[in-house]
Amino acid sequence: MGIRPKLIILVLALTLPLLGAGGLVAVTVIEDQLLDEMRHRGLSLLSALSVPCSIALANHEIERLDDYLAQFRPPASNLGVPPGLDVQSARDPIRDLQSLCIVDGSGRVIAHTRETAYGTKCEDAFTRRALAADRVLFEERFPPGESPVLAIALPVKSGLRWGTLLAEFSLARLEVRSDRLRWHLTKLTGVLMVLTALALILGLSRLVIRPVRALSAMAEHLSRRELDHRVADKGRDELGTLARVFNSTAAELADYTRDLETKVRERSQEIISKNEELERANQQLSDMNVRLEELATTDGLTGLANKAHLLSRLDFEVMRAQRGGHKLSLVMLDVDKFKHYNDTHGHLAGDRVLAQLAGVLRSNLRSIDIAGRFGGEEFCIALLDTSLKAASKAAEKLRRAVEREDFEGQDQQPGGNMTISLGVAELGPAERVNELIERADNALYAAKGAGRNRVELIE
Image (cartoon, rainbow, N blue to C red; front, side, top):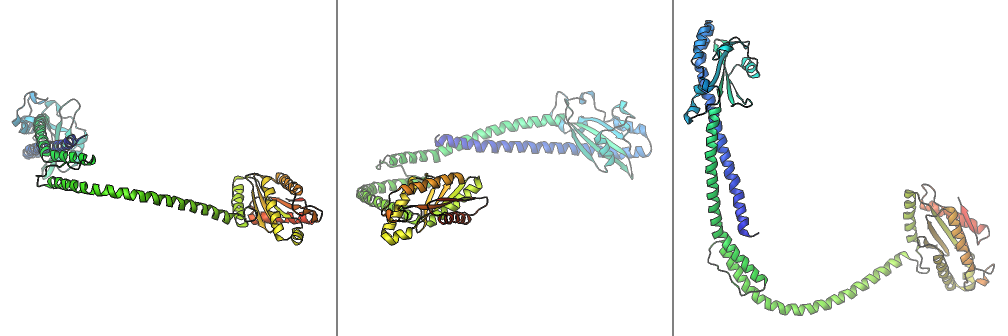
C-alpha cells in the first residue's frame, strides 16, 4: 500500500470519529438543555399552582381545587402523540401536560384533571417516593409502545403540608425537536467531514506525498547503484532539506564506492588468508581440548577411567539407580601376587601386564558398564542394571578370561599363571557410594583370604 492511501485512511480515521463524536456530544448537550428547560417550565407551573391549592386545601374547598385543575385539563389531542408539531410548541408545558392531580398524605386523589380518577389511590413507586420526600422530584418514564413522559411531584405547603401535586408532561414534542436537531447536525457533520477530509488530502498531497514520492524514487535509484540520479530540492522545509541531503549523499556515495571497491578486493584476500589460519588454530585447539579431556578422565597406563572420574560416575549412577529403582552392582578386583611379578620382572613389565589386563576387561564388559583403575593393581567395575546374581556371573566370566590370557612371564608366578580375585556387592536401599565400595572391597579381601583366583559375594 502506497503513502497516498495510507494518508487517506489516516485522515478519515481521525476526522470521522472526531467530528462524529463532536456532533454526538452537541446533540446530547442540546437534548439535556431542552429536558432541563421542560423541567423548569413544568416546575414553574406547579409552583404557581401550589399556592392557591394550599389555601383551598387548608379551607377544605375541594370544589375550588377542581376548578383550578379544570383550567389545565388537556384536550383530547394531547393525550397521545399529536401528529403536527411546530418548534415553538415544544416550549409550552401546558400544551404538553397529560395529567395533573393532587393527592393527600395517603396517596388518595383529591382532585384530578381526569374526573373519573377522583377518590382513587396512587400506589406507584414514584408517588410513594413523592409522599415521603420533602422536595420536588423528577422522573422520566418510558411506557412500552408510548411516548416518554416526564413526571414531576411537588409538595403543597402552607405552614403544614396539605398534599402533593403530581403532573405528567409528554416528551413527544421534545423528541420530535431532538430528532430534527439530530438530523440537521448529522447532515452538517457529514458535510464538514467531507470538506475537511478533502482539504487535508489535497494539502497533504501537495506538501507531503509528492516530495515523499520523489525521495522514494531517489532511494530506489540509489538501491540500484544509479548514483547519478538527483531530486529537486527547491523546498525550504524539512523535506527540502532531506532532498538536499539525499543529493549530497549520492555524490559522496559515488566517490566512496569507487574507493571502497578497491579496498574490498584487497581486504577480501587478507580475510581469506586469516580465515584459513583461524581454522587451523581452531582445529588445533579442538584437538588439545579432546586430549585434555582424556588426560583429566583417563588413566594413562590402562586407558580406563581414573579414580576421580570413576568416583564421579559412580556418584551419578548410584543416585540414578536409587531414584529410578534400578539395580546396580560393583566389582572390585585385584591382580594376585602382583608384587611377586614386579619383583621378578620389574615394574615396566608389570605396567605392560596392567595394560593387557585392561584390554581383557574392556573386551568382556558391556558398553554401558564403567571400568576404572582404582589404584595400583586394583580395578573397580560398575555393572549397571545388574543384580547380584548376574554380577557374580559377569565377574566369573572376567576371572576365566584373565586366567586364559597369556601374560608375559606368567609361568614364574606362584601356581604358574596370572590370576585375579574379585569381590561383588549390590547397591542397597539408601546406601552411599563409599559404603558400596567398602562392601565390595571386603568381598575382595574375602576372595584373597579364601585362596585367590576366585569370586566372592557379599549380601
